[in-house]
Image (cartoon, rainbow, N blue to C red):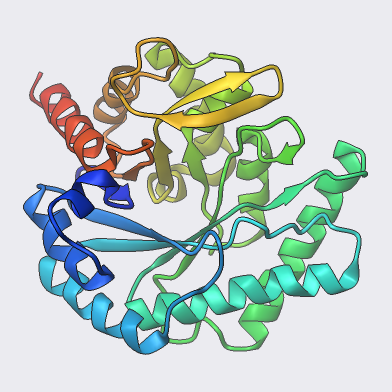
Length: 289
């Protein structure tokens, strides 16, 4: 198997061509030459399950692998028990939408430190996410759905829980937890640390050490260039930006050398499908070397 490529959103081009609804997305993505799509519920679950079911059938017909992104305001490190239950319920609702869409991956942001120390926030996050996964198993949420994965994401700001080591270690808590490696976030948090194939290799090697090759190979990937400052991420950029990274070629080299078949989602600012296709072409050139 080889890596597959898609986008999070359709960018400006989708609307400029007169498209409007989620039901038009599957053919647009397929016609672009892409194989995957991520639908974001970042600002809340503002869709009926019946519409999700209709869209899911179209994605399946076009052969597009589908992932979803849970609301951005999940925070398993909030000390308030009510807020913890809300975060847990955001994942519950996300799993219901996974089933409606026929999607298989739910990406989520694990936590922010708030007023807690990083160690306190991290310990609380691990405890609660492990408890949440146990609750979901007891509730039968995953019955007959062996392919469903929950994918905590590496984050790009200093006050967020989500260094690549924190996320990989978190994913040891359940077989259904696999990392979302957002390399733009990792690069922004590290002030531009991802430059060579060896820089990406450090991340993947740590994952293989902790999670094994099979689980690492199932990992989700977000890729975009991101502007950053002293506190990390500022904003996403398109691939035509010449100042900020990371560039995709060093990671494509690693993908080819390690024979990885990850799902790679482009999160550029406005050119998501265009930049996703550029990544796909770079990757296949590496395979042909």
